[in-house]
Amino acid sequence: MNVATFFSALILAAASAVAQTDFPPQQQETGWVGMGVGQSARFSVLYPSVPIPGGAQVLARATLIIEDADGNTLAAQDVQLTGAKGGRIASVVANSDTAIPVGSRNVQVRAYALVPNVNDPLTPGGGGYITLVFGLDIIDNATGKTVTHVPTQITFPKPAGN
Image (cartoon, rainbow, N blue to C red; front, side, top):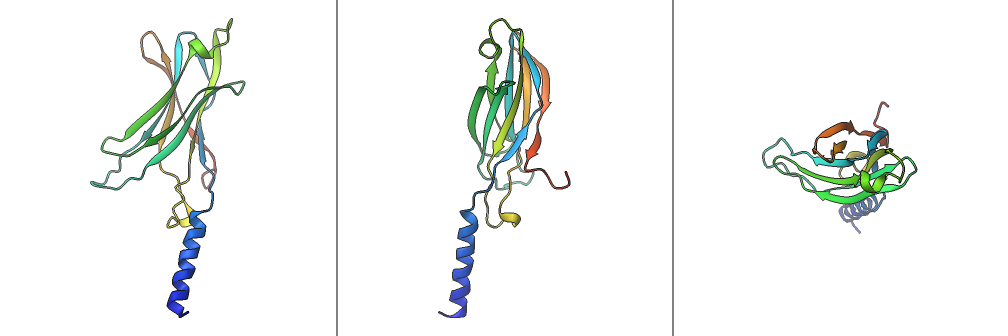
């Protein structure tokens, strides 16, 4: 085996090993917020467009989850988004009619998203996360108006400097 063949094989083996490594998903979550009778919680994700004409965007995946204070999942959905002019959006909804226990007037809810690592062997550090924008809205069912909006923050892995 000559030197060039050896290094080519070494580079391919290293790229394969990095590509097969499991990187943890990024978690973004809101704080707790109350949802009352006649309201719904809508957790949305936006995959913003790239500001470069013809800029390439990869498929973005995320799992959207809304849960109550007892840890019960009220709504969950895996979504796939492709960036485009104007961006793309997806959401999941939990309605108070099914989320609030009988005899109660409200329930505390939070939302969180799991974003898989791109796992790109060419990205420094072995991978990265696609930039997605999340938010939880409490909606009045009768009017369709947003009563409360809660943004998310990255809770895992912690951003550098935090």
